[in-house]
Length: 226
Image (tube, rainbow, N blue to C red; front, side, top):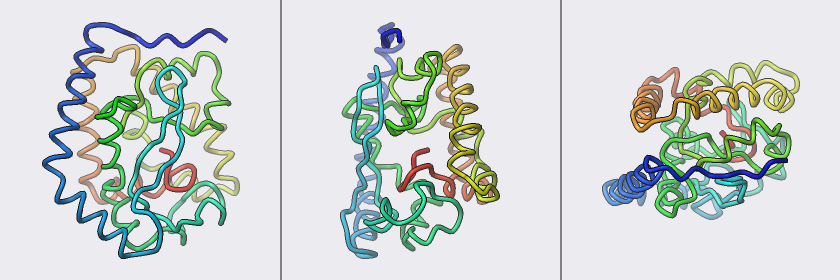
């Protein structure tokens, strides 16, 4: 397998600078919302406020992704490692946070730290990355992002998974390869302008009730892998 060589262009450096600036300002401006969400998670069910999970990032290196916890603490030992629709493991507060994508806000810390970018291929767990072909592993040559073209395109992913007898198999054999195809195509035309367009498309999807529900209901692996 050929080594993964992260890009080092001027635009990449500028993107990293903008990511750090936007995430830092975002954390400051959103601090009241972050504190409110943290308090709600803390009071709604026993367990930590943040959910931490190993993902594969830039250059194939593992890192710990952060999210507000939206499921019971034993979710990874109770049921399929895929959340679809009305999963009983999701807490009442967690359901609200997922619907509005607020559970993803702690990832601004990942962006500030440099593990993630605002826009880039969503990071997967190691066991799914192990299934990537050499070509698909090219998504690991850039920092993973909070949002990407596949996140916008697969707004109705939950409907596909909910009606399938083996949802994880469907994800691995059909949905994941298509997401990777979309993200590889994104890498071919990636600019700061296209990244801005993806951010706008994501915000529009979150703001629309039907699309927001679809985006929040289907999350590969407990606590969400998408």
